[in-house]
Image (tube, rainbow, N blue to C red; front, side, top):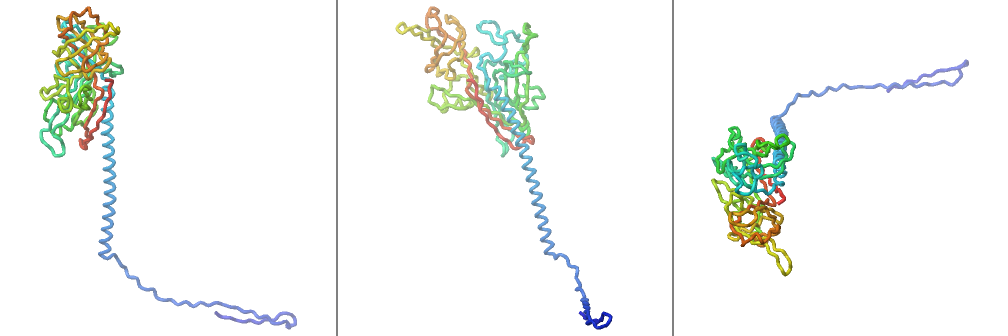
Length: 432
């Protein structure tokens, strides 16, 4: 820093005090120092290996997250699709099976003459015109009442992740169902079908009992619903050429098992009862069965929900109703099947029973209403004058249809890739 002083005088006389002015100037001194020389450096081998390892780990994490996300998404989609198929099929079964009606005239069949004293629904049909009528249930045989068929199919080669035996049940019954927008009383059948047999038009694709299927064929079975009804309307109700029509609907694909159980409880034994298959009903340790015709035929157990019937040779007797002169009380007709353990345990008050004579009896053949059941002896509501009886008539034949109070349906379904089997079970309550 440098300071300089300057003196000056002012005024005319030059006598004024001098003025001193100081100038100050800052001088800077800079010293240029040489910059250090920077050398170009890179990663060491260890640092490079660490970086590559971290990059690989991060890439694997991202890839795994993406893979897991896709797997979860695919699994969710297939699960939803599978349960959608479940829901559609089981809702349809529940809708129709819950309306099952007790009937001993299941199929629209023409009797040969009137010797039986009873005419079935669809009596106007000709034998040659029944069309698909006798295809349901037992093929080419007349099914008189609602029937559950227990059968199985087998895999031709055992696999560690798959059972060898698979349920192949079916059920055939009558109910009011919707057909082309109209409610009709129709015969309904639910069963498993093999698409290969469907293409060949073999018995609606039904799988015979104890049939052997390959693993791949067993993964492509379908659950079908078949509806058979009399095509009767305003345009042909006077015609004698009325036909039975059939409509088949696919409910679910990739089905491996269909199992159907019914609730059975004999109120006159000390067994607990419960849901069972026909084979379970034959187990005396679990239940006392009243069905004398329940036996395996060609690998199939057929459970008919019917006592007696026109196809049955069962006969019994009845005792006339009498009037108690002391109290004035009428004792109804008593119908009793006394020669077996059958006590009509599945009938309820209000159920119908058709009784007819087997010749040589004065018993009036007609439909009666059950009033109540006392230890297997049925009291009938309708009064029958004792004057029509010369003695307690025997040789009476009968048929009384009933509906189980509930069914249990189990369906085993695969996803669209024919993997991940899932079983869903539903209880269907009826009016029985």
